[in-house]
Length: 178
Image 1 (cartoon, rainbow, N blue to C red):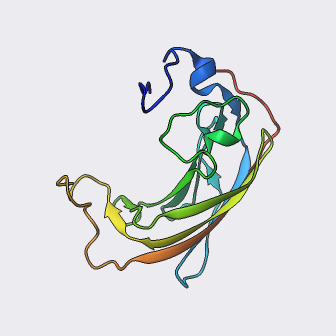
Image 2: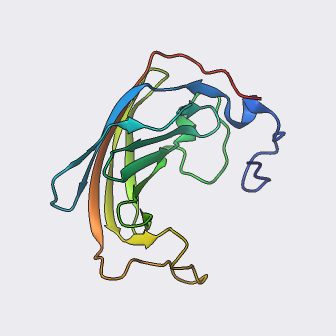
């Protein structure tokens, strides 16, 4: 996706090197999600890669067969030679929590999450996130967004979440698709 200044750089949107050259795909990993004081959920399924690119850093999702997922985007500033889009904090990135067991719910950003990246290389990605005062949002499109407020799921209280994540691979650089 091309983002013109001031949201992106003036780089050519067709320049794969500037906009997201794939660096690595991880082949194994695990994330642990703990919401409030509930038992932790273990997520061991990784989405299809590539998971690490020059343009945005990490773009990876861990999921389980019960319909839960955690997604990490960025931080692009940790990848050598990365450009600045201005959309994400370069040192932190962001996480989302998704749940499809009751429709398609995702978390609101409310007070948000603090993400700590311990390792982000071609062979290893690891870190954690601490999230406060999140709310579930109905992302299925059925509740509607009126432009002022998010379609919070009624009857669901705000929650806190603790997340740890790790992924490993052999350092292979996938071939870009034309």
